[in-house]
Length: 123
Image 1 (tube, rainbow, N blue to C red):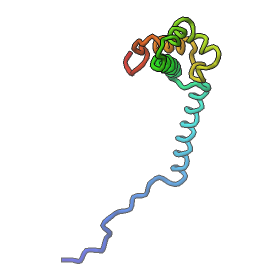
Image 2 (cartoon, rainbow, N blue to C red):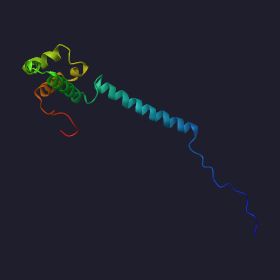
Image 3 (tube, helix red, strand yellow):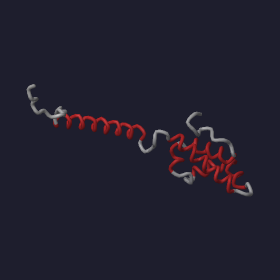
Image 4 (tube, helix red, strand yellow):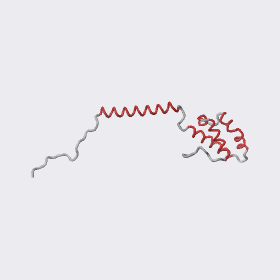
């Protein structure tokens, strides 16, 4: 038998050139940057789900007042226009500015003790 030439067990397979790899990574970064820029321009300072956030923030505020009000006086105030006054005076915070009417609706639902209608994945 003739002796076999010594060959390595693994073979070298060259990948893409550095130039091609750099161009591909730069293209991917440009596409991601453009997509992020588009989303920021579309929604400005608000997140895409701002309506849900606004409703839930109002609901939590109304629910908090309902739970800590032992006499029921504060809840009665909220239900008789207090939520609207609360939001318009700026006490609702930044989340109330996303959609003020939904914040007030959430506040009324929370103060009344109703189940949150806009909460959860399935509505």
